[in-house]
Figure: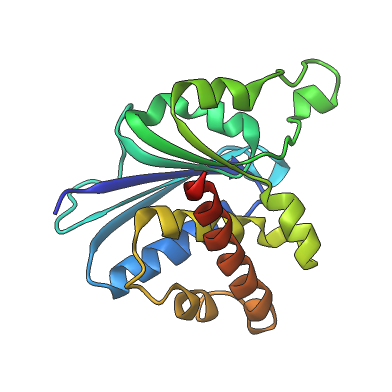
Length: 196
């Protein structure tokens, strides 16, 4: 089995690492060889965070090379464009449509670029999901990461893994129900997107 490369990116506090841990845990339990690496760039201050997950029958390195990611999951719009160079030409982007201004933008030293998602969509197959808005409708904006994870699970076609069980054993008990609901919503949303 070939190695599949998944790159998850966002800004500090969006739950990028948690989504990666759920993915890694489920894959390991399913018998895949999995390697994961994390990069935190001032994540506590809203800086860029990326995690790389590689899985297959035998994986030798945790690092995804430039142009080698099969799927890029972005928790923030600009991060999708920032990491696009890591994606294969026939790769897939799953992105949240939320815009979180960086410190220089907040300080008025730079401007958030316009048309970010249009540029991403013009280059590769892209699923844009309003994960933050849907998470707010569920009652907790922090579960946007699990909505995007649900979409990822659907696109990876790993339905044989009981992701709801993995989520239940990974998140705090009081957040299990809302995270399961978020996961199911992400599966549904990307399924609707597939039908278009």
